[in-house]
Amino acid sequence: MKILLLLVALGLTGAAPMEEDRQCPPHSRPWQVNLHGGGGSCSGALISEWWLLTSFSCDPQPFATIASLGEHDLAVEEGTEQHIQVADVVRHSPYRSPLHSLTMVRLATPARFSQHVQPAALPTRCARPGDRCTISGWGSTHPNQYEPRRILKCISTPVVDDRTCMNTFPEYLYWSIGMICAGQANTDNCLTDTSSVMECGGELQGLQWFRHGCSAPADPSVYTKLCTYADWIQGVISRDTPTTRPPPTPHTSIPSAAAMAGSSCRC
Image (spheres, rainbow, N blue to C red):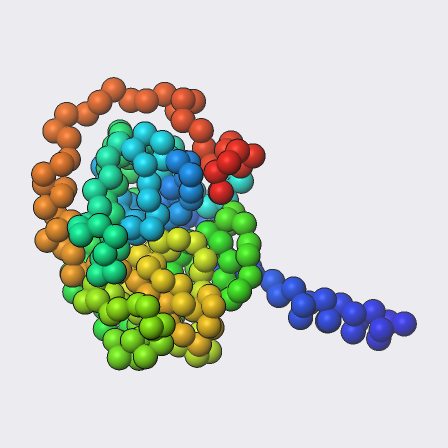
């Protein structure tokens, strides 16, 4: 009987693998932002007290989308969070182009830097093939498997050369110099959160564009190559950053992701 119970337990373990090893250490990615409300939910990366970056497909909406900073478990208010309305959205043009996937988001009030909320360092160089990077976001790390966005996940995967990436593209996709790819056979290539954040060597290097590794585990996923957009990012910051600070918005006036879990937001 004991042997039978052991076999059953092992079978259940194999059928439902644990994901603790893919959970980020709590608050180890203080630049990670959860964007929610306005019809969707996705990730972003804080780069200054006023600005964060996300992908084109995230589609945040001014004064409808909330940026939640200092998050780990989206279902729990841990006391580390800052929930701030989105005030402005600047999309890299040309819009709806297959060549770009980058959006800058300005907060309605500046973030307050703390142990749990810090900006990511922008790239000082481009990541190279073989560089090991950490991808972080909320969602599933199992290919072809849905999982609600709740606990922040981290996977480690290598940057691959452009040709290897292009060889995995479906016919309807075109390569862009604004793309970088990470992932190969026998590595974790999947994180289902839209605009998952790629950090390499302490610098922000990418935002998820196409999660190919979630449908074909051996294929690399595609990220926006942020090192090629440094001038554009700095131009937007210089042009559109407020010169005066608005009065603080009461914390209670902005719902968190946990509070909205029962609403239409897919958090």
